[in-house]
Image (cartoon, rainbow, N blue to C red; front, side, top):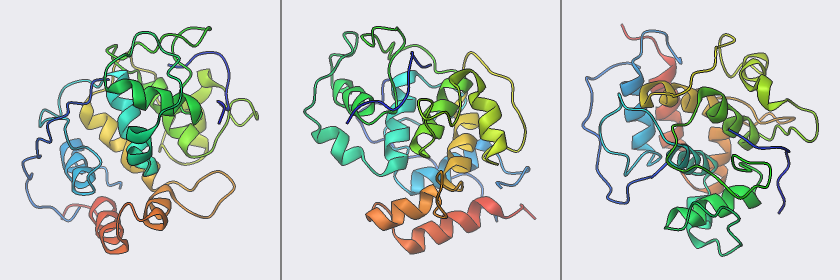
Length: 222
């Protein structure tokens, strides 16, 4: 596979699987009165956030964001088993498998024009995370679906985001959880299937779990 976009884009996932502490019970779109931590809890119940710890008020790194996005695709096992070339010289530990897979799959090209640096520990920006999400929804810069600089606008135009948002030089876990949930509920480019439907088709999650998740995140808290 080769990247499907151009130029450059744009943490570490902690290996220990630390469970989230359940938040208050809610009938939880993505409702405006649902907290990011509650959304993170719902994502964690789908095994999408394990290993990240319990502090949802902190900012995410680029490597953390990429790993989570790969999980949203249902491809973490493939990433862990990937043995393709890692072009990024600054990721040499276990994260090298994820960035190599992300590069081969067209999710990331790194942070320099030579595609040799990923900046794994740099905090991910709102624009970078949104670009990652657009790419897994099958939108391509090379095909003219969007431009990286307009990623936030594109997310609004495809109704993934409810408004055109300003870029931020960092994104807190709570806010990232909201973006991830919105991506899961968004249809893929030229498809009637949402990203969460693809996870069910791949067997990454059950239909029952998907239905429970959708109900939880789309109902207003009473």
